[in-house]
Length: 178
Length: 315
Image (cartoon, chains in turn cyan, orange):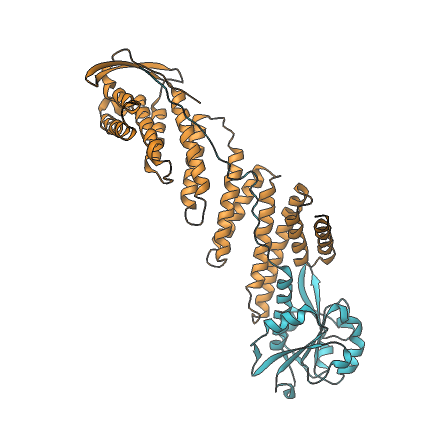
């Protein structure tokens, strides 16, 4: 009696080149979120004069950038104390009107800064910019990148001359500019 | 392919029932279920015999019959206990084997189909190794199909069985390619678990990272591990920011941005390596565009954006 058995050895490849494609997160949203979160915090660490503590808390954004839409969405249903956030878009300097607690000037609109300063003279509007050198040219807070990280410069003089008070916590986290 | 020859010839009393079990298991005149079942019962009884307990041949036969049972009835059962037992019995046979690889003959005589059968069985360690390789390959294949968020512990166990079986059978077996393949696949499974809830399943981040790094240590040019590791870091960095509440305190924001920036920086060299390995791969270019954007290196990010646009235009 002769018996045989055969063994077939087949090793399946899990994949020839196992590259899976994870869903890539959108970096735009993350960068916007960081700025929006900073802006929200500015409302906590800067004190506006009493007459600015009524009505909505208005944040103006120069231009019709996506930042306006994103900020509107992120601050939806949020408030500063009793004041609800209201995000407004301004197409140009001439359209900046009414009470505005914060005015955000994107980099592309930085050239308008001198005119904006003239327009806002005497008003307690915190100017927030995002271009190198702006804090020395009149803005109160200027977003900058340092070591690949979002940071902000703070010019205390430019803020306090418009009757706003800056908390020491905010000042300690900022890059101080005179 | 390997073959084992069983020659009916001579008597060898102590191993009668063991020999009968293997003859029974291979008797094509009896339906598979009956013969393998009877063979299995016979060998299970025989193995307790004092002369069988330390007999490599008896353990080999037991492993062989259990393997036959697995092959006949349980190949679709990814969690087959019989296969695990077969594997264990064959390992035991090898551990008791003192043949140093030299085949030898075993004689036996027993009542079979109303007659006295006398047989010579050729024992060869190579056959045990062949079966271990066969079982190893089935473990590997099932490990691959069990790599999901629920069954991954079994997949790991089976992969270890595969490795053990292959290296027992062939000590010089080049396991590297399989190591890379399995670790990459397991890392992907861990990453899915991590991404299902990055807070609750946070330990899977480190486990995924570790596996991709192990693959890169084995093969620095492994495209999958380089790309996937870059994406793991990058996505986690973005997740940290996206999961942050807009009302979070400024001190917390500082910490989160610090952590996410560190992750983007960690992602970069792996993404750069992935680009070197696959220069015009769209996914890799998109990954680099995102990393540079997140590191606020706008010029570089725009450069990749332009490359992607060119690629899309060419299509």
